[in-house]
Structure formats: structure tokens, C-alpha cells
Length: 245
Ligand code: DX5
Ligand code: ZN
Image (cartoon, rainbow, N blue to C red; front, side, top):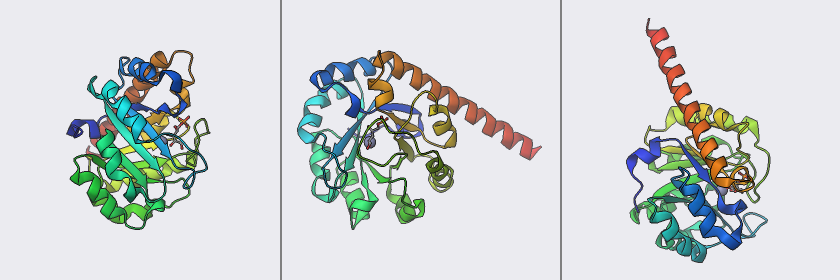
């Protein structure tokens, strides 16, 4: 389904199911959604672009009713080579927002257009080591940008803090209706910093599904992220008022 415009501007905790218990995936997703989560992150790995395999369109399609019937949305993250071959299939399977790596594809603009034409949100992802200026030519044709704060392929890694320096650069250049998704190593200790730096869709996998009570952890992270956004907004407004005075 098309993502409501407000969702691109709002702060959302986006739990990644990569760290969920796959034997009860539907149940775990339902539990975090009932605890204030609106968007679920779905990681696709092909064993080529990244040295790991995960899940594909069949799992997405079977999980889609659990998410969509609750008014939720899927942010699907393709860590695969030749994303142009599979993008349409993932939208048909239930992706509401779909991102792929700029490093994995020769004609990213064309893939973005394909995704948009099918009515989904189109996003471009970039690795920690990729200079953010690489996606500058695409900034006018994206609905969101996904900034990886770990090297893609595995959950449970530590956030690479200097990568957060890309966020203010992006925010300065992106229209307000474009979301910035931050993915990798986010948890209680750093989620506020991620939001203050400019992230507004904040992915957390092991922090949520590795917790004893994933629903409770999701609620806490969502709250911390939104509080940080409120404080950053207030600080920004106060700063602007002080500069005008
Ligand atoms: C990593 C994936 C991430 C992963 C995040 O390659 O793209 O979405 O699930 O997991 P955590 O939050 O544990 O770093
Ligand atoms: Zn991801």
C-alpha cells in the first residue's frame, strides 16, 4: 500500500526481523506491532552481495497480512546483487518501502522509478564505506535513504559511530518529505544520538528481538527515539529563535 506522507516525516522504530525467532515469526511481529510499532524491517540477503543468506518474497507474502491488517508497513531492504531483477516481485509480495544498495546496481535511477511506478516507496541504501556524495544525483528521486551503520550481512554488530556524520549532510540536501532510515547496531545506548543526527526510521534487530521481552523493548526504544526527536526539534527551534534575536 502507498505509505501515508506523514510516515516519511515521523520518527519510527523499525524492528528488523532478522533477529526474530523464525519458528514463531508471525507471533513476534504481532507482539511488537501491538506495542506501538508501525513499520517492520525485512532484510533480504543473497549470499553474493553479502556473505549471508536470509529470506525472500515467499516469507514476505505470508507475513504481509500480519503487518498490513494491523495498519502496518514493510520496509524491505535488499542486500542482493542485481536488485533490478527482483524489485517488482518484492513489491508484489508486500513491500511498502523498498531499498537496494547503490553499490549493487548499474542503473539505480531506473530501479527507483520501477519501484515508484508500482506505488511503493523507493529507497537507496549505502554502506558505511561508501561516500554519501555517491547518491547525490539520486536525491531528487528517492522517498527515503537507508544509511548502513554496520557492514551489511549480519545482525548484532556494533554501530560505526563516524558514519552518523552522513546524516546532517543528507538532511541539509533532502526535502523534508524524504525519510532517512538508519540500520545497524542501534539500541538503547545510542538511539537518541541517531535521531539527533537526523535519522527518523530507526532500525533495531538484535536490540528488540534479542531482548527478553521484545514488545517492551520496542516500546521503550520507540519512546526514547520520539523523545529525542522532540528535544532535538525544541533545541533547533530555540537555536533559530536565538539566532533571530
Ligand atoms: C544487517 C541488516 C540489519 C540488521 C540489523 O545487514 O541490514 O537490518 O538486521 O541488526 P542489528 O540491529 O542487530 O544491528
Ligand atoms: Zn537491514
